[in-house]
Image (cartoon, helix red, strand yellow):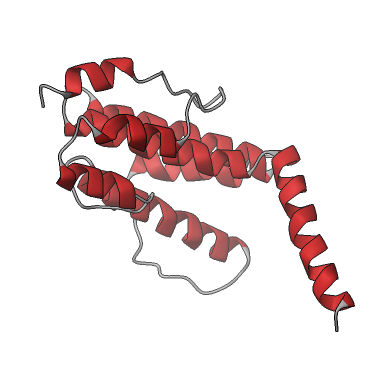
Amino acid sequence: MASYYYLISSLPSLRTDAPMPMTYEAFLAQSKASVSADVYGILEKLTLSSDKGPLLRQWGTWYRAMQRELNRRRREKLGKPFDRTVEADRVTRDMIDRVMAASDPLAAEKIMLDAQFEYLDSLVAMHYFDDYVLYGYAVKLKLLERRDVFEKEKGSAEFERLFDGVKQQIMSI
């Protein structure tokens, strides 16, 4: 953990309303020399629903509960059957209320991203240079990567690229 002092203090701040200061790949490269092989393996395979490791257990449990509640609410809104036994905590339910009332999907994603950052901050509280901080930072980077998928210009460019591929396949038939 002594090697975490430099690593963690050298990481740029992450904010939901700012561009990613580094890619996840750059974070992995920067972390490789400072973490054990086991920790690096977890970071390398990290997804938003990962639940193996300090902080990740609590995060994974909360993230899956949030997703289940969101899915339940969406199904309910569409008049489709849903699992009535799913129950999220009050804070998560309030956040999902705001998401469901959002004016557009991008605004809903912003509400969820802010709530996810707040939850991660609550897990990292009172930790400074340990695995909790490192994994919390990694999850936040993954969340920002996901956020960037929703940017209009990037999304339009990706749609055009995919649509051009479909058109080429159709033309070759």
